[in-house]
Image 1 (tube, rainbow, N blue to C red):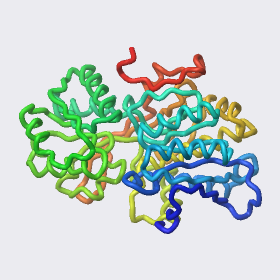
Image 2 (image 1 turned 90 degrees about the vertical axis):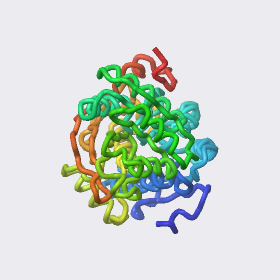
Image 3 (image 1 turned 45 degrees about the vertical axis):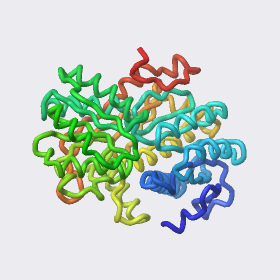
Image 4 (image 1 turned 90 degrees about the horizontal axis):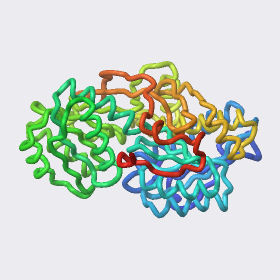
Length: 402
């Protein structure tokens, strides 16, 4: 797999099905194939390639193959703007699938809006993105935290401490934790927003001990912040204080965290590899046949798989790949039988209704399901973003927007 990722920063046009001599429909893929975010980007790209291969093997879109132009953003924000412009202006793509971080999404949105190309953001995030050309297939804070905070308050108690990274994902998610704490009669007794470079969490752990919360909401990002989980466990706090997260496991952190630190940790997302349904069984079979089973499949992979399949369904429904017709088809309320359960694309918000799974870490670097919440709505996005009534609306809403 490493050998296939050696061409860095160069657009690679890949025809994914040899039986097609001339592909008429072309999509762009910009993911972090190298750099610190590649644990996510490689799986996003693998899922996109697998989805296209599967669609092409079944006739492609409108009887023609899909062609993919792939770029490596190298975990650098500037590469996203560079390659998004290249994909639109030079490669003339019909749709773009790109980005992991909120900063990458926000860098891309103005470019695709100006170019009027459907853009799919396939990652869990803090929520609030609203744009006619942008479609979000990952879960939002209003989907994850709404069910997680209520569950945790009932399980552990009403005093909450927040540990989060000091940028949009962490700070906006913290706003939602405060909101859902109030809704459930709970309170935030302390919070700490930390640089991704921090490696010593002794000061944070001391603050947690002094605050005496019933549970901590930890939103660690990157290898350094995963160290918080080890230090929390080593301090002997796991037996006294609950620990929950919305993003633990999203990059297979459970594989590198020790069983002592990971066992009993609660997390929730839109997909985990052990989800038990026939569609997921077929998806896992396809995935492992192509990529092996050394690394568990993470949620962004399924978010990307869903995005490609929803776009292909919209092209077939529209009868052409033209942006306006495809966006109209996407806004018709498409439903897809996905590995994580049935998903429905909301016409107004351009977000998915989907299942949310609360799981618990086991003693063998894995998870077991605790509770499943079906067809969870993206409530905040539905409230703020109605692109049918207001098609020119283009904003990233935050909880401060009343």
